[in-house]
Length: 388
Image (tube, rainbow, N blue to C red; front, side, top):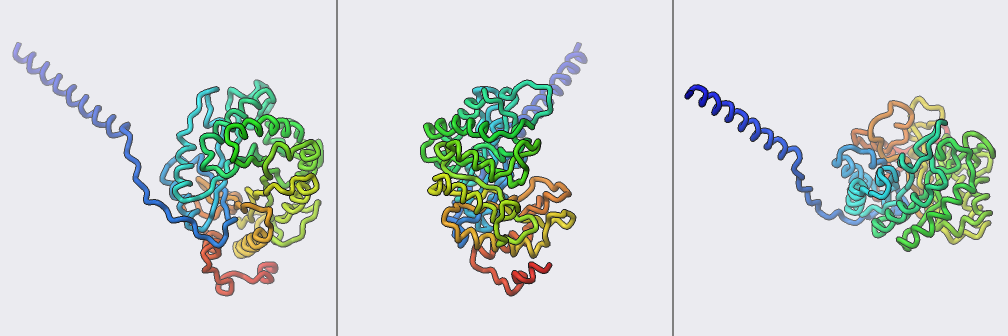
């Protein structure tokens, strides 16, 4: 009987030890850890107040990488960022909002005194239509417009002291951005007519931007997209100016120099001037323009790329041009950093590698922003850049 008691006691002690160890591990893993108290960052002092970068923080797994990205953007001299805040992430279940991820990005951006330009889009499953055809996460049936407007209003109200502007949708003149539906500018206008009053009622001071159009020469009724100039003209002809506070623009240089003159049949950096002319023609000249994606690519194996030195020269020239345009609020370069290398041409747009190593353009922009750039020492002259 005593032997049985000893065995029972031994088993009891063993389980007690195991439970204690399990409790310790659960506590260690699950217990909330206190966030480090960050010292206040000094205000951005940059000679390039229009300099902005498009970040990709929403899909970053580790918090420290979000912090590091924003710190490096701040140290480069950027005054603002563009970041994507997906509707599907915030309202995965209809009527139930989860803001933690958005709060984190906003908190760190505010810490570094970076203005935030927020792009809204990406439709949750419950708001997408049921269909057997090929579609995308950008499919938005008209009956879901009011639900998206509610999300946009909730977002704007929550972050109205941190967000400078809100972009409604992304490149709506591309078929992909409408779930491969036929591109229709009046459909996008319908969305703006629903979203604009809802956001303004919730956050009157937030600037609402028309979704940046993709630079494209596609003709009407193309299965791929619609020429951005023609698309915008139709929007303004049908009253867009009443439902927008400004225009977001995507304009890339491709292989052209920044100062190449704009032409309707050419895709280059100064195409933004043609879009601006349309705004003025239709009485929206008092509204600002935000270039929310732009830049050059220096990938060594892409036909639309340029050399790293030419990329530096063209980007600095673009900043010079931007500073002569009083109607332009921000020049936001795509992209600050990729969360992981693609091992393909998209990597050639990054200012910082996935492992946070600054690339030549980052260093040049930093030197320009803080007044230490010496062109004659390491940058090619404009003529030399043209000949590379």
